[in-house]
Image (cartoon, rainbow, N blue to C red):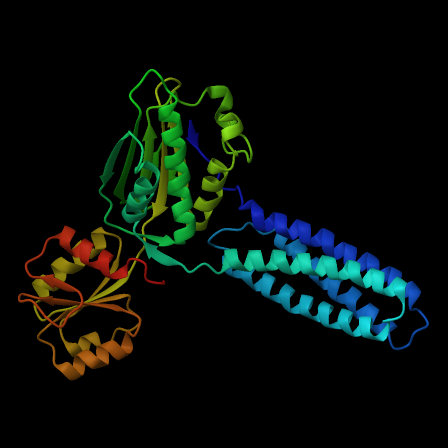
Length: 405
């Protein structure tokens, strides 16, 4: 079937901008009526003017919001717009309150102020929702763990065959809520499709794998640039998607499930993937099942390897590079002190204690891994020597997963 257009924007925040513009236009309209009502009131008229000016400023911001796609690249800018609007809305509320006190006996004025209050409260509700979306913490996430949780949740009572082949060792930098929504909706749809095909054994297969790309690679009509990726695939034994429905499956509220369906599952998947700059590729043959592949950028970490044996340091750095990390080697504590702001530090146990303390101070947010031929009882994370690249990838993954980035 092909890939999904990456120009699709996350609809909800843009819709919120549109809805807020309508409400703010109502505030301007009511303040214009109040200007006529209070034209000769030297104390109250400036307050009405201020409300109108505040609302016009918010309209400009809501127009910016409506035109901004909501994804991983724009999330901070949108959060800034929402914060600025929130400050102005507080000023509208404060001025309206002052005006209500000054005009407490004027029923006409109070009626229009009530209309402004209603619009204000709805705008603040929308802003709260928008800021909630924008302030999810970016973390390093284990796709395998979330996929396992989803399977347990959806299939714990089902007499159903589920195949798990979770091979990815890299993690994905993103938002746990949205990643869960992607996997949950894909697996839920696959389960429904497989259950409703009378001509095949119902089965859902979920797999993950690491995909290193040296130059460029193609998955269907998707071109992947050089880098490291994590691919999540969800396959079912359903009847497949008929060609005439293929272009509609991501439409909001479009469903083939009748009254049981809301038509929001794949719409949610398509929007949530944009938070991770992920690509989506679909293979479907009518009467022969469907496979959804979500292609994520693997999270890249800055890793410092401190070891007095250059051969070991070189091997460790090569392994780290294979999994897409930026690896830095230091042969001594003096060299290690030239590096700061690392995400992960692998430390040989032979370093002097005072040097270790200095390295900690230069990398306060790093995850530290003891790196030695003998166990370190005091270390929270430990990588024994000798090691292979899978062990190296696993220990880095274990220390970083779910940590804020």
